[in-house]
Length: 342
Image (cartoon, rainbow, N blue to C red; front, side, top):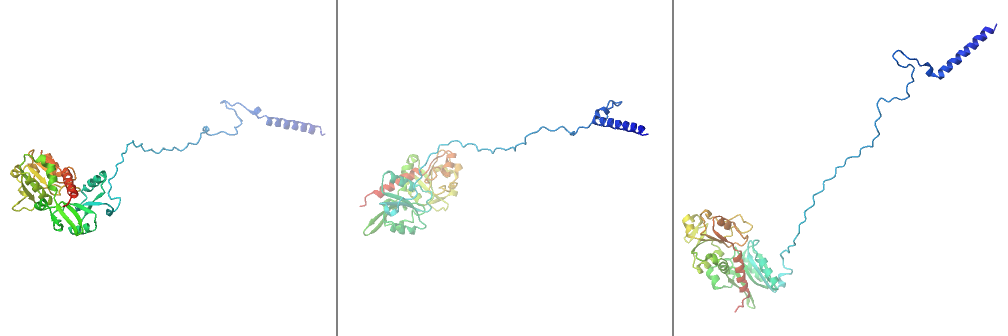
C-alpha cells in the first residue's frame, strides 16, 4: 500500500533537485524577447552616472613677482670742499683779526675772499662778519678783540661810523663816507682811522666803460653814492643824484623823462635793490627809454647779474655788476691795513 507514496516521494525529490540545479545556473533561464532585449540579465554591481574625471594635481597659487626698481644710472660724483665757516680756533688765538660790520651781511662774500687769501699766503689772520644791531656796538667790538687790526664798513653804517673814529684821511673826509677802518693799538689807547676805498674800486672796475661819456645819473644817496660821485668828479663826468625824495640838488624818479634819459648815458645803481636774496627788485627807472647808447653800472656784487642789469641789456644797453669793484676795493683796504703808520 506504500508503493504509490514511495513513487511520488521519489518524483518530488527529483523535481526539487532539478529546480536547485537551475537556480545555480541562471543563464539557462535567459529568454529572447520579440524586440531583441534579453530578460533576466544581471545588473552590474556599480554603474557610475558620469565618466570619472582624470586625476589632476591641485593648482599651485599664482605668485605675481614684485616689480624691481630700475637701476640708477651711474653718476660720477665730485667732492666739493666746503668753505670754512668758522675759525678752527678762537679769534684771540690769531695774530691778526679783520672783519666787516653792517646789517645784513648774508649777501657779503668778503669773508670767503679774505680767508682764502690768508690760507693761500699762510698769513696768521682771520676775517669775520660782525653783524651789528646798532653802530654803537662797534665800541664793544674793538674793546673785546685786542687783535683786531681793521674792518670794512657796509650799509647802513658808512656814514654813521664817522663819529666813532679818531680821525679821517683826506679822501674819506671829502667824500663824507667810510668803508675801511684801520685799528691801531697804542699804550695811550686805541685809534680808529677812517678811509674810503669804494671810489678806488669803482674807478678801477668801470673806467674802461666810462671813457668818452659825459653825463651820469647816480641812483641813491647813501655812502657808496657819495664815493661814486667823488670818482665821477675825478674823471670829469657830470653827474646828478636820483632819489625817491627829490630836492633842489636831487632829481626824483618821476623826472626821468625821455629827454633826460637821452642826456644821461651813464646810470649807476648805488641802492641795495636787487641784492641777494631780494633779486627780484630793481630801481624804478623807465627802462623802455634805454638804448644802445647807455651803460648801466651796478655796485651790487651778489648776484653777478641783477635785474637792473638784465633789463638794461634787454633794451640794448651795456651793463656791468659790482663783483670786480668789490675785488678792487678789498685790495685797496688790504694795502691800508698793511701800511706803516707814522
